[in-house]
Length: 79
Ligand code: SF4
Image (tube, rainbow, N blue to C red; front, side):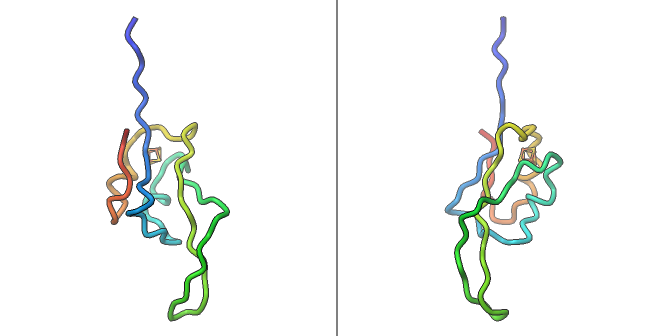
C-alpha cells in the first residue's frame, strides 16, 4: 500500500515581515495562517503598534500552496 504524502505550508520567521495585513493570510482558503499572542511593539509614523507572529495551523492547512504565491517576502514554502 502506498504511503500518503502530506504537504503543508511552513513560514520562515526570519523572512516574514509580520505585516498586520498579511496578503498570504487573507488568501488562505482554510484560514490556516494564524497569529499567536506574542507580539513585538514597534514605533512608526502612526505611533506605537504591534506586529503579529504568524504560524501555520497544520490541521487546517490543505497544502494548496496559494499562500506561497501571495507572500511578498517569499517567507512561505511547502514541505
Ligand atoms: S497551503 Fe493553502 S491551506 Fe495551507 S496555509 Fe497556505 S493557503 Fe492556507
